[in-house]
Length: 390
Image 1 (cartoon, rainbow, N blue to C red):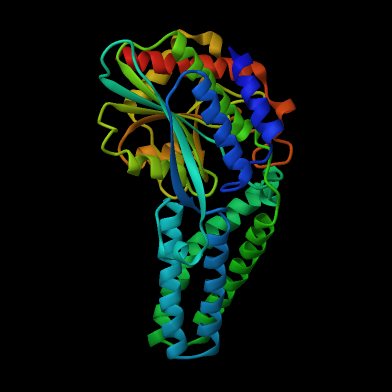
Image 2 (image 1 turned 90 degrees about the vertical axis):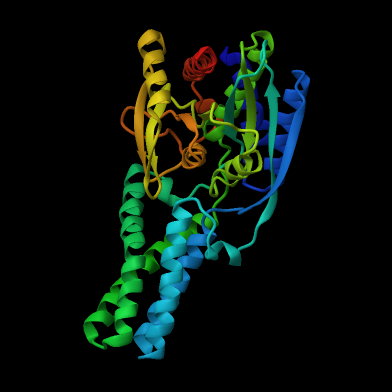
């Protein structure tokens, strides 16, 4: 089955190439998805939305404003501490909201750009009683140094974790400074400024890097989604309606999935199950399903879908499937979980806990493993079939 998926993966990652969020190339990829679905006989739909073109500016702004707050606190007493407190609270709260993939005041000061979701609906052979949403994001990430090696990423994870903790700590220090003036508080503020400065340099470097071709992340997910759409034309489900959704702007805050769920909330009922396909073609991986994911707070996948995945893995040992828990990252599945839907995300980590070539120039078509794509597509097909059978 992977031949069909590989054709799509190659086209998206080689012919279209890097698909930065809200760029012409992302739009070209959505056009390709839409045309492919039309050729299969589906009625397609396109939702327009406004998205953040990059994930890094919101953190650049947060860190810069925090440095200004430290300067005000350090240079001025009284009014300086009061101004620093206001800025610190806004930054701390907004950053926590951003990490929870929510709208926040920092976003209001940053540019947005037009993008789109493309979707089509596969009707069942009988009367539709359930809905399954199969989704994969089209856009690709930048290629920063922080993702260049496990060591660099570990350094970034440590610094960013300290930095995120430091934001509310800084706000508390500023508030205390309104009432208490001493050098100890000023020294804490300076220490936080050094940390924020280091993080600011990292995210500035990231912001000015090129986008990856994204063969694994996430042409692989889109390719398998389109292959499943072709298969459902040949083998329709009994009573489950399947929505195939190519989302936008997953890499910059899951804007596409957020818009899809919000826009179609009246059509998505309690019997809707989300299946997210993301980065599923890496060598020495999967099929791998997520037990939970955490960008800010842990989001646990529901027992029903986890049990379903475990049952498929037990029934089909030939697929070699396993599970993983993700920390410091998110997928479109996070939005479905936040909104209370049953969901399952296939995201193929190695058993050592990495996604091959993630957010790097090396994420190219020649590094996609056809066998992994084939086994993951078969696992996804089993998920869809078994959800249909109830």
